[in-house]
Length: 241
Length: 280
Image (cartoon, rainbow over all chains, first blue to last red; front, side, top):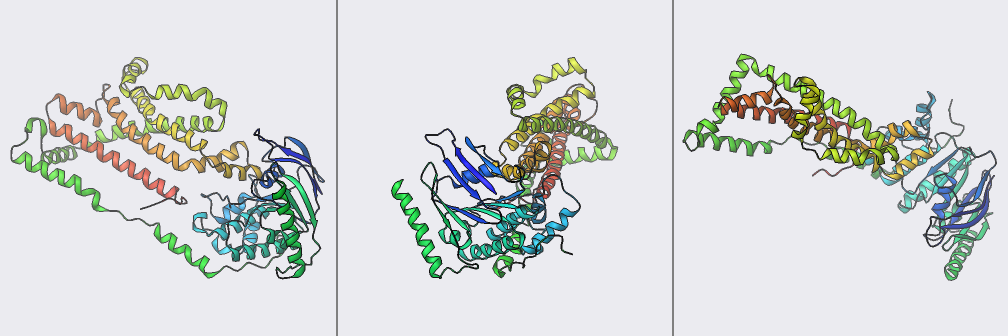
């Protein structure tokens, strides 16, 4: 389990970006954080990834702070001078083994890009590039995958295909997923737990446990009802802020 | 056996996604264009006509045919290789020395902020010193033989590459560095796997500028008591009143500079084929 314990991040502006955030990420679960732009969702994921130090509070990891994690950003952030296969191998870090190449090929096969191994990022579409980024994040078999609005820049059909693919990876690998998004449909489709973050500085306003069976269909009454509740929580947030 | 502890159905790619790639690749091929030859050829023809019609004073201006004759004589006597090899050895030795220093200091300054703050103001101040200002000092310190010449050329090559390397590294996209950080790249691995490759476009610009300046500085260097080299040929043509020799050496400088820059440009294009840049 990962415990987010009263995390505050202040960049030194008029007010902090996030304040006193407190919740748990259960192992093997999909935790989705939703909130409007500027509420500090990405700041929290950067703190979790170690890219920012919290101003106060701490993150408690069950297995110590060296829990292996992968991260997928809003943009693919591929190294433009490396081809697809080399970009995936980049996920192993500077210490690579003889196995690295084979594992990279296998994950590329699974994201449907094996045939594009020698292509450079400039030659890929947005969806393909984001799949390479997911493969890079997963190649060293992390137990936790952090996703910062990874599908926000993609068209609807590519987004749906990647969401389905992500769920297959989650099921087969017993991953813990922490996803931030502003897409309510995406949150209800994927989450075991939805956390609504409000205003600026971002504070948690609501938490929803999702008991809908998977795979979920957007047309289901339960899905729609839950979506309404999350939307209401967000609207409430707007009214208060 | 599958090395990963899971199995996932491969995702299907829509045909439209696959079909776009070869077209993009085709677009990047460039052809050599003869258009660049039009202006120099026209100038040469006009010059020859002017010389033949007596519009130019042949004692100071010569003519393209006379210059070609001079180059032919240099070729026939084998003198051209003596001069060319002397100049090439100086240019490349100085360029290699200057580039090595510039890359080393540029990378260190680019990566370590305190080194940048320590070195950069001094280097920027020295950069403004004109090439000729170094000549008497280098003669005083290193004599008039090869050491001073190579060092002078090295100084010329150093500054543009140092500046390009530092600027390149300090302008590397923060987002790429973050990806490296979360994947445990630190120190040398971060520099060699991310910062340097990301700075390569700027470094190649610096290398080409450095090489251009090395060719300029070799003239100043060969004014320092050289007995061979294109710079020597230049002075020899002036002092003996042979404009065709003088102009022939200028043309040889231009030719050599263009060829070496072309080689570097070709290398740069190959090394930077991953760049998603605009190519009209």
